[in-house]
Length: 177
Image (cartoon, rainbow, N blue to C red; front, side, top):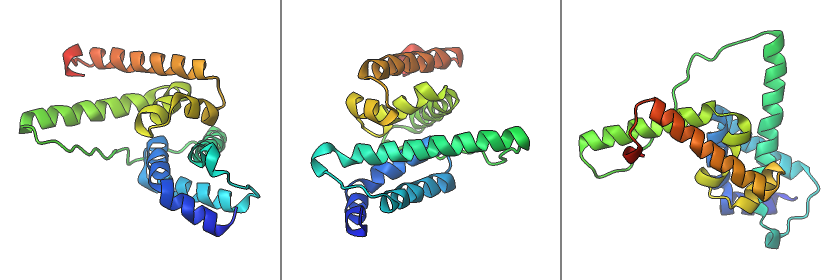
């Protein structure tokens, strides 16, 4: 892939890829690194990009596999010499014109859901992020994680149920979410 095609891809769907990286990594600096690695890897490869076959899914897949590879590498390193992260704060953005109390409740609910998603097993977390936060279809998600569409649907269903169950355990009423 040449620099011109890569630049066109960045312009076309770079924001979506960045958001996906941010959801996977949950930290801005790590997400920026993953984003850069994704497009750098695309530049390094000898791909011929076919705009008819949804190149956006190709970049989602590339970002996912780079992230997964990095997670494996970190797991190996942590097995040898564990380290901990002191800054676990996540950014929450809420655009609402409701009253202050309702806005606060919605912000807390969003924070809770994000924390729950981050604690889900990877096989449920990644399809949820791709489908709901990155607006990928079930077929695109299936291609990205290299699983059949039925498996993606099943994992989405089970992931939603896990989130719902944990929200109920945390004291949120069913009508509030």
